[in-house]
Image (cartoon, rainbow, N blue to C red):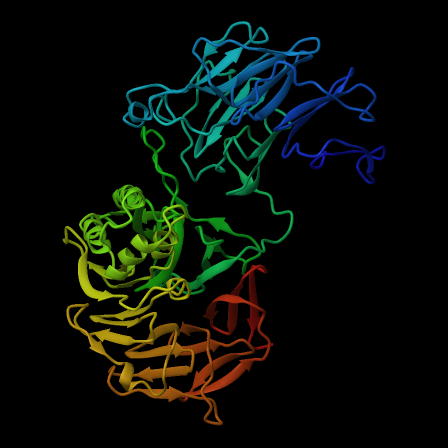
Length: 613
């Protein structure tokens, strides 16, 4: 069943024939149930029955309450009885109509349904005061089991996983035999039909699942397949204890911030690990040049009443032999943290003692002020900006754009302020742009220090989409701003010098900047410039004296490489030398290890090129 089209095969799936097309407007296909008497096709807006092997279909929606939020979420068959889970509750099919099924509590939403030969399982929720739920004062979700087709129910809600009194998890139920899996961010298993639950499996140790959008299939009590929009297709062959990713084709997602890493402390012949930011949301690693990838996990607590969503990773960097990442709420409305890759390279750990920047209060106040301005259009802009600056950190121009923006439109500036805010690390000193203002933190500090560098130019949508460029070494920090100004601080951001007049050519945009030893190289829209002291600058050209437009720089030991739209270059005796003449379209990142070049691409994964070939 694809969308609203029903296909059949008579040769074990080698060929398929269109049998029938159901009415338009049904939206998402939910499930297909095949019984000896009839076929049932469920969509989020209706259920159909066919008694002639799919040639003709009849709607069977009598009794189903499907209002604005009452969409069908699941359909199961147990002992020749059909059940449908909806946004309004659970329904059982009678002769020609559906009857509402009662629970021990007043269920308002069924999140997930699963069935075996003898047991029916339901993850259900009630309507509850969100303030009490978020504070852990009220239970709002349950997992129920019925052994008599929904006439009576046992409460089998696990107490060792998600907070029983807290926000309901979007839990996906999967069942076979006596094995029951409850999966969301993390999971918990039962091997006795829910009578007891095994120890919790924390987020990151199993695929993330969302009952509203993700798919799961139980082959038997040992083999399960789950397909989530966040983690992709996974398989378990041991009843859910462990999971392996299923790569139907080589991964071709967007690869950003590619980093070539070898841990020097482990001696010679250490295999290369490539780290990358995948699809602008998580850190992944590969040891086979990009053929397969593993997630670098972030441990998220499951038992908090008001649980955080896993952070979206926006940047990763390598500094002093360590890998760091910045992440937070994808819309810029929550907490922003910096993480370090653990010594075993399997997880991301928050930097100990670092203050957390939280935009939730700003989001709340911004909403209040927008409503205030809608009611009073003459409210002075300056007073609103001042109120917002008292609630959060950010550039004055950032707050001005927030106040100017249409209150009825999604706020793009908080998203871009988070997603485009770069960070850099030098030893134990951290620099991070937050809402277009550059901050600094060192161990022992109780708050982020304002370096007094921020974007002062008007943040048009074009400029807001650009990223600040940073390069840090020892006490020195170079900053390439969105307006084309290059500034430097030699004392960790306490004092600044504008270097723009010293550059060998006018600049509109910065592409990249890196240190090679004590020399800084800055790639700009007019070419690449280098300086040993920040005062004297020289243009880097090819043998003909032509500045090359380099999009990304990479360092291998003491050797600098650059990639343009047409070729890859190596800096040799201060001059660019072409080493590869073919470059894929839309290079998103660049790394070098020995004689091998690696490029991350927009939609072709990672490609590599051996300079010796």
